[in-house]
Image (cartoon, rainbow, N blue to C red):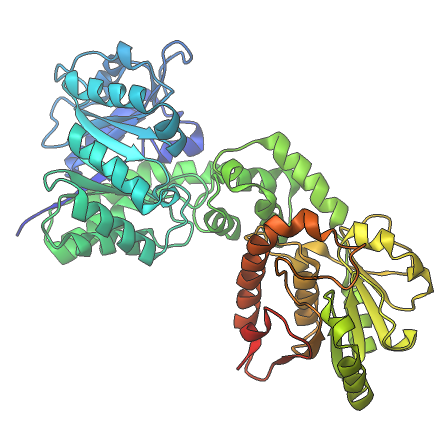
Amino acid sequence: MNRNIKILDCTLRDGARIIDCKIPDRDILDISTRLSESNIDIVEMGFLRDWRKVVFKGNSTFFTKVEQISAFIPKKRNETIYVAFIDYGMFDFDSLKEYDGTSIDGIRVGFTKNNFETSKEDLIRCLKLVKEKGYKLFIQGVNSLGYSDAELLEIIRLVNELHPYGFGIVDTYGAMYVDDVRRIYGLIDHNLSDDISIDFHSHNNFQLSFAFAQEVIELSKGVRRIIIDATLNGMGKCAGNLNTELIADYLVRKRGYNYDFDSLLDIIDEYMYTIKEKCTWGYSIPSMMAGIYKSHPNNVIYLTEKFRLATKDIKHIMSMISPELRQRYDYDNIQELYRAYNHTKVDDKLAVESLKTLFGNRNILLVLPGNSIVKYKKDIEEYIEKNDPFLISANFITDFVEADNRMTFFGSTKRYKKAADREAEKHIVVVSNVENYCENDMVVNYESLIERDNEDFDNTMIMLLNLLRRLGITKFAVAGFDGYIKGKKNYFNDIQFEENRFETKYERITFNMRKMLKKYAATLEDKSSICFLTPSVYADIFEK
């Protein structure tokens, strides 16, 4: 049988981050020795850090020189390869000692997309230096999901030129699904030199690490050399990693490999359970949130431990962090977002129940901004006469019906302030992000009405639709909501909407609105019914 799979155990490096890499010297030696005796192919001993910034005093797997690692590698190595990990920018590559066979055999170098874009020449220099000094080179591009196909191909071309021992697919934030693994693996496998190993490193936020490992093994078809990263008992920050014992047992029972499963269990019994009494890892709802938002686990850990938030609150605050900032951690920024979130958070249970009572089983007509409500006023009035609906307008007060039969929904502070006649209204609903609302207004929770994965997530019309969905209302008519068309009058009142100022954004706004509306429409049941009384660029989305 062609044994093209190797297990890389990174317990002493990635797993140990959960305890700040503080491990007694005798335990480091014992674990590394017993992993080798268990026939694990590659053992990662820890990090190499810059000697000018880190002082190595022992009892840690944060090393500053390869010579320091020698004492923790068994004299009898069997066929095990020993490696260390360098985060680009956190080590002085010029201080790297020539390979002499007494310490590690290889070095894994991890770099971010920003490193590649801003420090490409120096990064290449450092990668070449590792090989020139005699070490096996492993290249790890952090967060493979963060690259487009074209960007990945550019990196692969560079990797082929450098010709390392291995190149990694890295699911840094535990955010991949099976289709992501297949797409990225296929792209790399098709373009990477045949004699370079593909290394797969996952995090278990979605409980998929073991499934991914099997998928990559299947995709290799017994031809491509594969390295699977894992840790004992899945040890690691937040959700943890793939379990070494799981993948070893799979390869023994399904593929005929010769890993010593019992020996691995002995290491777990002796070391992992003691660590787990002090630290927690494994699947949790917060770790799932880290995966969903492709976030550094420290952000979720901080929100969980610092503020003791409910899970849905963690979700909302995570969504407020920009995609770029999620990939690192800035606790000051999180505190600011926490304060902003609490400023808009309200308990709207009573408001929601009041609205359900107000609407009852009546027909609903949304009268939304758009010049068509002026142009087709007669048609709208005929519909009202025939169907006797309850009217809901957005960001302006309509006079199509008497005050008892209408409600105005405000999602914008600016529009709320401009509606000077609102105090005479009987039914005003404001979203909690609106400033200085009145005591008699019904207030609904801002975060429950938005989804931050779109640039225009806080559009008032989208928030109104989401509120109606919360109320269980999916049958209604719409007047207005024309959409933005360049060169045409798009608002019923030009004073309220500065059309010329926004003309350059019409195409983008329409694209984003259609994207959000399609997502909304996809959630509706078959019995839903949304009809447009006036022309709209969005009407086709709701046609059945």
